[in-house]
Length: 579
Image 1 (spheres, rainbow, N blue to C red):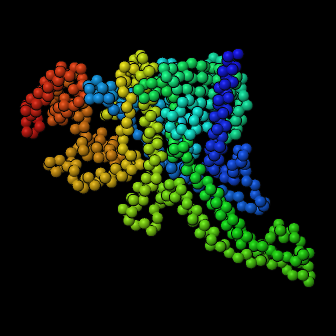
Image 2 (cartoon, helix red, strand yellow):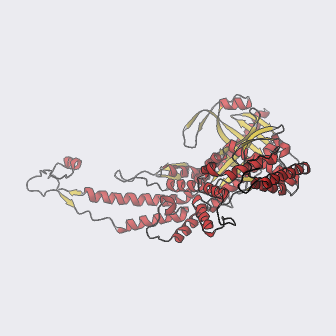
Image 3 (cartoon, one colour):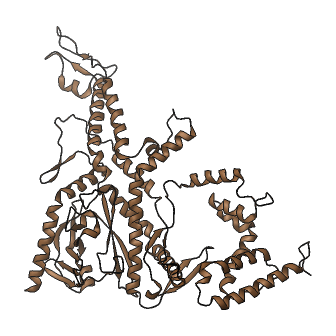
């Protein structure tokens, strides 16, 4: 009896929230239809209806600018993939070490979860519907690991629709259709299938609606997670995730807005803004084509009973056609159809400009072409910067979501990774190293972006700045020459980093010296002693070395190692040959 009553209360809460956001859901469905090219539809009290043609001969072609706008914005936002690092809580040595370990853990986890693809999926939903969500949880399969999935706004039901931030929500419902076999495999409860439909209206076979309600803790409570499906409670216990700041219990969801609204939980999509313009543009183009067809095909006037009208209607008046008409009557003639008024072209151009002003996607971004009247490189750069400015708010929302997801990943590892774990991490020299860590190695969740604005720092911009610095002579040494290490770093920035494997001997020596900083160093006759001395000295002076527990012992070893390099260097002849 308790199970039935508990599910009835859960289902009622879900239906109340669904009714409250029904208008928003209708708008999202309309956005999806317009982006897909189904643009002769409108919102009705019962959902979405189709606009029927007034006459059979009406042109009903779709000239889809919505999809082009969305694709252009997505292509621009695809560059926003910030690298994350963990900022230490203080300057203490232990905090520095844990922050460095947390940064490596975060990099390895992001690579394993393919966060770039997850963010791309979320950005797509945000562009189409105004908001997207990321669910950060713990997968108990095998040894257990963090799991991050993209959740569409159709599956999210907030408690307070007027609260804009996730932190203002006391509870959140995640409801979605799940195959009954997966429900049984996850919860061990058999659930009957329901009659459900997907977002596109297609029936879903063998699925049931799983309703998950996450409730924040109140006072000294632990929160609650209640899961039910088709009359049965599948799970009802304390909220399991400590994913809020300070490693406290919270909602394992991250919201990403396209354009935030202060009075609504869900953001605004640019598709919603351009729908009226798209409708007007389709109407103008179709009416214009109807006039062009009328002019091209012509309108034939015939006297009643003078010709076979059915034959004339089917064949028209092609060149060389012999027209037989009744004796004494007027022959068929083509009426003057006039011309297409210039107002049609003017309105078409005005609507195209409105697409640009409303969507934030200029003609340069959409067509990848430079206006013929634009001849100044400075003016072109200013236009590109203005385009980036229009997208800066959306790009910042992507960064904020990525940073929040990264912080929640670290908090879940701190909560669940109690035993020692092993992860692969790419080192600074491109080599793969194995990282051993446990929950005790994660002491801070203050995640910050380690990259600059990706929209303004494009590869072309970086290369142009590099050429400016080269012309200014800032990369040249005291002897006025460009050393091999700097030259190969420049090639790497320009996209030719593979060439460094051919000639950058000094870089190889520096990499070897950095490995010696962590191992048992041994001086070789073929070492570049100047490079080794510089790398070892820089390591000894770093804050990272000062934070090591064995700093005093390690310092004596490295000082003796540096002294041997200096002895080898003194023994070298001026020609470079050793004695």
